[in-house]
Image (cartoon, rainbow, N blue to C red; front, side):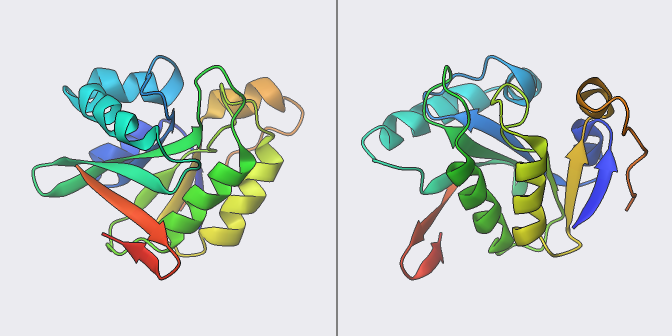
Length: 174
């Protein structure tokens, strides 16, 4: 995993697939989810319809992939069931694990899932990212403003560098 501090949407502009944390109610009203819904027409409606199908499941076992033509563009990764809840570290770990098994060769830009409005500790989420996202095709993107606001004494420049995928006991299925 490589790391970078900056605007994750710049990664999209150079061909990365961007991971966006979401809830399973279909609301995309804050943070990266809101930005994604504003950038991509129709994304929120498709995601909300997908969430309605997920509402009968007891746990998170999928992510939502949004395509632009034939190209993967956005992976919506559930970090919590309800928008009003704190993010669930187990859901975040599942999303990282699923990304580590991702069958495409695309580079993937991943934010610190659940650390913004989800309220998780950055150090815990970063440790899970390091555990699962071991390939150089993953870029862990931390907004510089996030680091400055939460860790002002330790801020340093970082090192540079509509399908559903489902998990079952056999592995990832398409």
